Length: 127
Image (cartoon, rainbow, N blue to C red; front, side, top):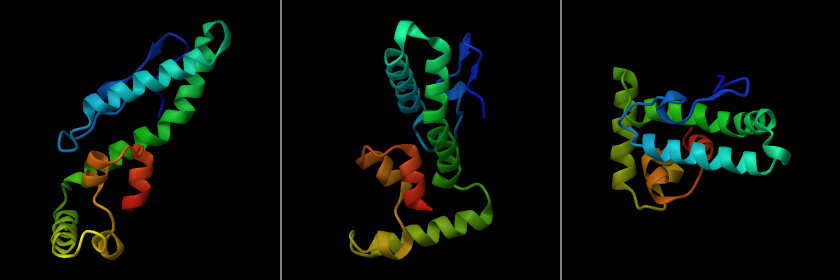
């Protein structure tokens, strides 16, 4: 998982973390990438790109891994995972909103839509 080459190339958006379109987070991820890199760059002295890229990569890689896994989990491709996904959704929808997450876990798509949690935090909550 490398998202930059020396201090010359930085991959952002789908180039860094191509996901399934079922997650619907491509543009959002790209904007977060740019925001976090700009923050890392502004915190360095003399626009030290090498340090900013390293800082950015260390901070962003957990979220990039999480968004990749969340995209696979949001709409599973394997029949076994699809059955589990549908079963959990059915149970979650029949229970009161406060009880569903306690019984079958949180819905990743709902957390992404309704909260400002990072991808890595959503991923931890839904596993």
